[in-house]
Image 1 (cartoon, rainbow, N blue to C red):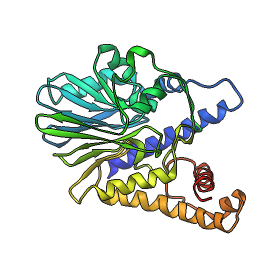
Image 2 (cartoon, rainbow, N blue to C red):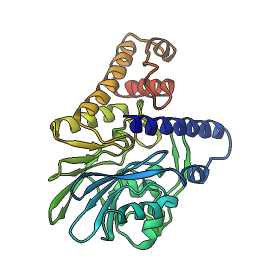
Image 3 (cartoon, rainbow, N blue to C red):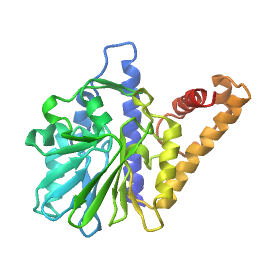
Length: 313
């Protein structure tokens, strides 16, 4: 528990810094997020943890996503690859559990803290698998909600294999299901389900730091986040393990708590909207427990209000 608390505390500090960078950028030349943050992440600590034979997770202590690691028969499969400046570290951690080479990488979505490593691994001609919207987003500059500019990747490091809905990857001892999640954290999210092991990597559709970041500029929507959490609950059991985008590996209990938090906020906003409440009234009425960390609560309520206006006509 102490390790998990320290990890989440560090992440919240970095989230605060990220929001500061974003606020400094309003009305000015767009900030390149990767350039701004590389120096702050290059020295973060990470560890690789065994989930079961051949299944591992690389957990960072800072602003980087969890990396799923599956050791297949002839090579290693990664889910996400963090930052280009951390690629050597990732290789070292993988090498600490197997001598097999990295065979391919799956991107859970397009955000820099999960797939900036494509800029390093892609140059090594390692195949990268993603939803088609991830390829599209990475192909051009993207203005992230509240978070500055994510610059385009060069053509030589873009995902090489894409899919539009769902896709199965067949390994000798595992079936890996890639499940497109529509308009949740972004418009290109993928759940990666290791069927035989009963392990999900959820990307940032499910996180454990509190109020999630929903990238509204790029297709994110609280309605989709709730639907996606519902999918996980419906398609899992008490033995399922979840690798969240950020935070420690957990069970269905934590996914349910996350879903219930979002539903509670959305339902309150919906009731007020139905009564004709203005955004000012909603902000004064909807209260989120101060103990809950994560992204800015006011901005989250404003997003929820906009999505209610969109969906509840």
